[in-house]
Image (cartoon, rainbow, N blue to C red; front, side, top):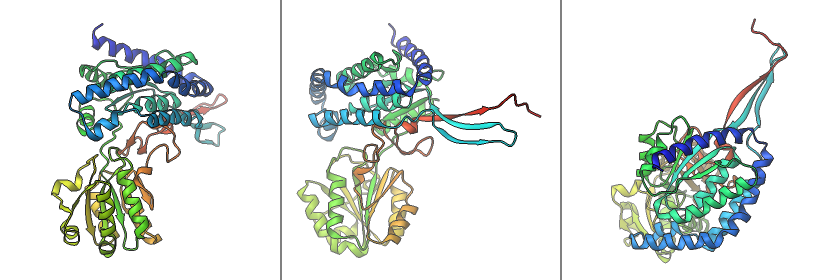
Length: 418
């Protein structure tokens, strides 16, 4: 069948499935989600074999380093995927909640009730665990989903999507609740971007070029997951042991993810005290440091930073380090050079912490905590479909509740407009 027809038919089936999903009791969706970890476990051998094929093909194609790591499903990652599915199943149902309500003087009862968005298209690259996370979050919130993963993970995503769809189907959900575009042909993406009558929201996850392509070439509303140029500011009073531990964990726990630290800011009053221990710790971790002139003067082993370094998301063992004069300067620097994703401060002073929290314009702002903690699991949201740097419709980790909208319901007793 022609690919354009296939994607079009997917859209039509997804719309029908979304209407059916919206009318189903939450218990049905809960039962399907609860069955998914076991279904995925049963498919483990097939998933791992497919993943090995994808990784070998990626190596032959020249993919390496952190980008290759993002593609791999290790035993740890597989357990993580199962845990995220279980967490999503255990979350409260976000659909059918009365968000507000009141009774008018004439007795008319008015309520605002949460409902699914409808049909969600998710276009993503590399990380195959997005397949399971996205399907779980969309079903938890009563939405039908069309998945289109990257060609580098096609075999892995195919196995994951098939297992998820089977669990949904076998537990009472519509056949087309989860659909996977099973082709590396980029024409399929263009067809998905044009499904304005059938897709209500697009969520791109990947590099800037992918997100820009989706945002600029579709009239479907888009929830963007732009880059994570994440900062950590070490205030004048930052304790050395905590500052070093948080900086190293924020950067080195996993360098290839969007909430990994990319820029480290030291207060001028703490730089002389903290910089030697920080340089030693990062060199031991194999991280290349690039610094402003003030940093390089204090630590000559640090490579001078270029202008582009201050806005670059490395996703690699590289870190830019700068010195600023006080919390206000740190806030200005972050708001000018950051991406609005995740930024943090290390301090023992409540006034500095509050000034930072109020001033930094980011989706997640952390005080005395690793930037790696910003996300669905650590925030108690279970699985998420990404971390939005938009302001509308959702911001930060996008869990099931963020994939609902609302409708107004008015209940009367023959009320008329006078």
